[in-house]
Length: 100
Image 1 (cartoon, helix red, strand yellow):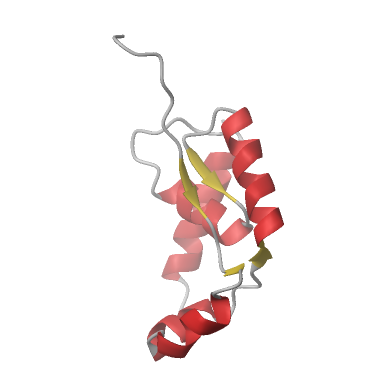
Image 2 (cartoon, rainbow, N blue to C red):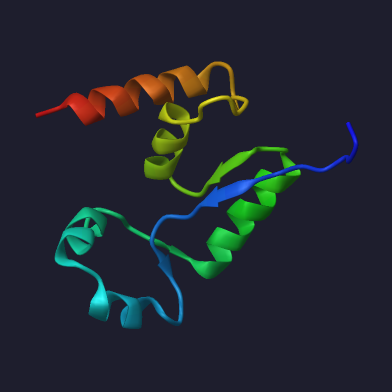
């Protein structure tokens, strides 16, 4: 390898930030509907999840169960976080997506 670098991507859920209320003023209704079940997290919780993910060497970093299911079911060539839990998360995401 020419350079010794790591690349990470963070998939934060709804994050209650200073601009969150302002963002919701112009957000399309369909997006508001999709996010309605999302409990959201604080910026501090998001920063903690991001730091933990980087420290653990995760390429795809999540902060809640919904985005963990998304990560497990769409990870492509990225390494699994846990060889036992990730297939379970992948299965649950597929079942959830196919539920009526």
